[in-house]
Image (cartoon, rainbow, N blue to C red):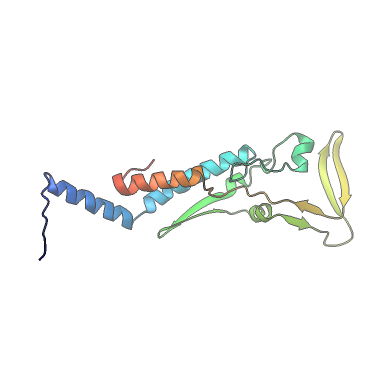
Length: 169
């Protein structure tokens, strides 16, 4: 024996329209991904300008920043300006177009290519100063990315708003 239930809803055409809208937005998430990408650019650039890594922790200051009273990784603005996003299909990529981004992300030991020493030039109290060193150690500075805290909460909120209501932000 089978039971059959039938539900009648006032405004049924509107319900069908809403369900079709949700299905269409589930199928094409690109508008939401582009919006999320722009938000991630702003968030990551803000963290870098405040000297924080992508998890919100203070980054180890560079010797240059300590010597000059400046900020680590923002002296020329090259890294901040190198962040980009790309939406392909259902994927969002956050990346840097500057090769130095990977050096900072993973850290690096720089050794002389010829001879025993590297010559480092920096601004001293009395003008340019030169130092000879055997190597330069750049520590890991994970300066951009998506953290599991506020960043993922923002992604979830935007995707939920897009799929369920068709709104961004």
